[in-house]
Image 1 (cartoon, rainbow, N blue to C red):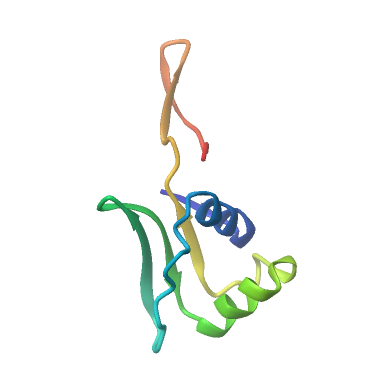
Image 2: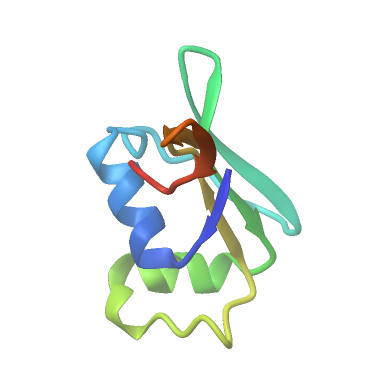
Length: 91
């Protein structure tokens, strides 16, 4: 899993169709998981529901230094280049 900024997280979730059913969020802190076929594809370590809802409406206002939540996505975590395994973010 890769720790990413909200815009990358939102793009990943949208492109992979993971945002079809949004749960009802009532209390923090918690972890919101997005799964496909039993595999966790993305997650949010949620500390602020308000921040998450605000960023869904106004993603351009995202400020990583002030973010209370942590956004994670799964990518192709290892690739082989010249016989060496290297981590790569590729979604």
